[in-house]
Image (cartoon, rainbow, N blue to C red; front, top):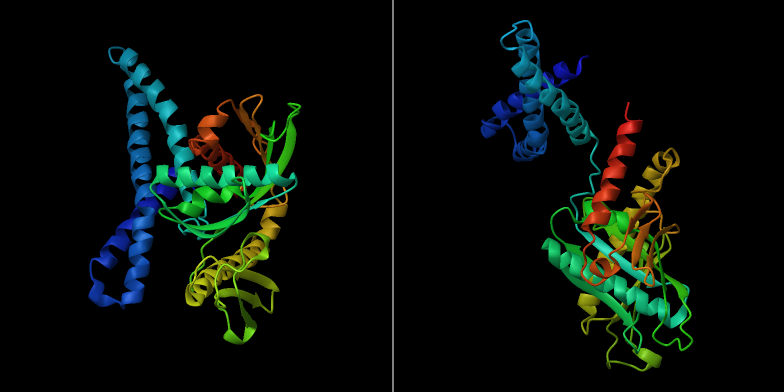
Length: 354
């Protein structure tokens, strides 16, 4: 089927949907909600389709005008512009029609762990956590800290947070992987550059409809929360450790004084990890066919290097290097990196689309 005919079908289907949802009494609430979402999800692609069809018609009219000597010059000029516009529109439409990751619209659970490199790795993990805090602020997202294990001099051994907002996972999912830093540590007296790393995991926040967890599959232990050095930080058994027996996933939470709040936070992280594990199984075959790791969330892969002496940030998946390390790390100016990753991911998916 010709591309233009496909677009005409898309527009017709959208008009049919519009007629259906104009009469909510003809269906139950669940069906109405489903059709309404389908209608709103397609608005953007329908607008692009209409724009393409108008431009295509203009192109055909201009071709006819070329036969008229008086109109030829003007027609050629306009035809040149239209012929540049149509391929761009076609690409935009094809991207809009790519299958959506149903998790893209979800909130996200962010987990950061210091890797190799001792205290310097913990300081870098803290840098990354604050970078994502600033990025969240810039995008108008809300970031709720779930747990934080800090070192004495401002480093972070591990931390987790719930990021809430519009299309959080769609943008943050590209951050999963090993982040590496090269710089002279503050504690280094000889001025030698050290390399250390931190691991970032971004999980889509799971809802009850995404993951079914049976109470019998959980082992829940309560214990007294401990601070640095193992000393008790309160006198009640408020800390919670939840083990999901079928998967072996263990989540501990002790930041809150209330056992109830710690349990709720631990369950949120547990659900996200189980959901992520299930998604990973489904994605494994697809990822195996992909040349690059963009968007697969492989957390064992080194994805990015932050080189302070050279002032650069390099993303190894797409060979992107930006000489603006302070704007990115200190200012949370991550959009340029994430936009490039999204574009590369779309290009790959377009290339493999049938």
